[in-house]
Length: 248
Image (cartoon, rainbow, N blue to C red; front, side):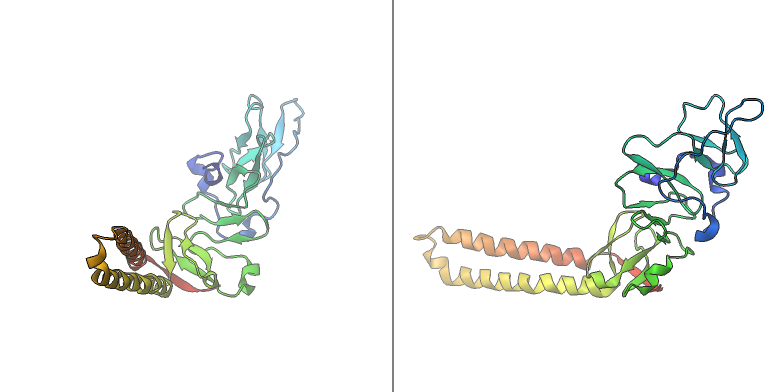
């Protein structure tokens, strides 16, 4: 997805990343291209939005972004395509995303933070060692979680009473064993009840099936519901458990 890809995938782009959110304060979501600044010789130039160096864009005016030769970071020289917008991650990685996107993930391996575009000043630490937004400190139940699938760290509210979907690998897991255990019991008990009802119904009405063949439908429904409930029980029992590292 474009929301997860840097505009210039060059290894040098990753060399200046910094996990601190204060590493980039002058740029942010919905970044606009800087104006052209002609040099004394008439060569079109733009200012790098990261290191403020001048970038020669002669012969590159048809591109949407250019790379700075000093810091290897991307700077836009054209407005984003229709329906898109530029977003600068605090690690300096420039991304492009849909104009309606609310959250995007930085693809850099040692960053992987989640950028909340509904509140540009709020970024969630996606990789280990990142600093979450201070505004999240006041949200009850908000904590750091290590994904059971990809072992990356993300932020999750344990009061949601729901499964957690990792923003990095997009896989679902239970945050702590308690949620999966409770859900498995919730499905196991009705499943056993349906089995008992089906068995009792079979024993007490089997002699009437020749006269009333529709009774077979009741057997099928009772045992089918029990099978579905047991499947959900097995699903939660075998679900991977993401570990809670601690509150923010």
